[in-house]
Image (cartoon, rainbow, N blue to C red; front, top):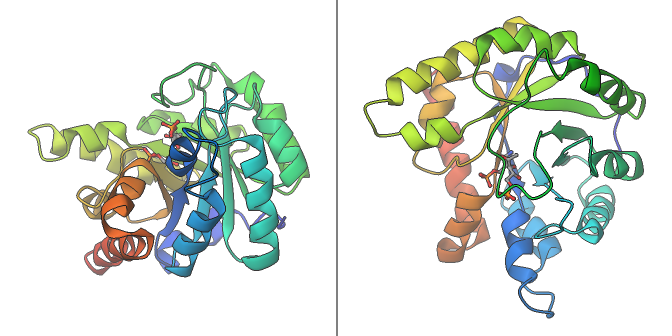
Length: 265
Ligand SMILES: CC(=O)[C@@H](O)[C@H](O)COP(=O)(O)O
Ligand SMILES: NCC(=O)COP(=O)(O)O
């Protein structure tokens, strides 16, 4: 869809605010419980983008429990025609079905996630350098297609240089431990690991994304610890909030969290 953006280190994310990419998995999950086509994934995308979200993320798992292949292609067409400036991020395991979508759709970004086919949810990052030989050619193929690659990673500073050596453009920090420690006695310790990992990633020339269990309570503090974060992809909590507040008010609330964090770094 769009050429690979310039190397991440050249366009320091602090130059702009962290982008909000809304993950639509849970809209599709609810839609799939009846044969009525509602709630609409496309309408959800339209409404969150109209409210100011800068990206759309989907994770089309092989069992199609939520996002289906048809959703991936319909969203690609809609973004291409109506929202060409909006980032399309497709997540998945490149050793399963992700590469077929990357080849067909050529999203702005592919996020490689080491999930098994039946996994309940994403719960760990890649094991580097052990997974390096498997990932390197797939990253290279994405680059020939003009697709940026982000590797889903645990907050391990020592793994960042390995990610860059593979050719990854960004890492996505898996933030479940941040979310589960937030507000507890472990928050400072866990936060320090994310702060160090984000710094190590930027120092290695990687862009920094983040996601999983981020919400309106824990987002701003996370971004204060990792001010160079280029993109947060948020789905579960944001869609849950939207059930109460509506898409537009919810997106504005998350954008406010991002803006507030940028004011204090
Ligand atoms: C990779 C990640 O942490 C999430 O983006 C993932 O998409 C969550 O998957 P489920 O929505 O299926 O829990
Ligand atoms: N990569 C994280 C994502 O897209 C959404 O994760 P969550 O907010 O649904 O936990």
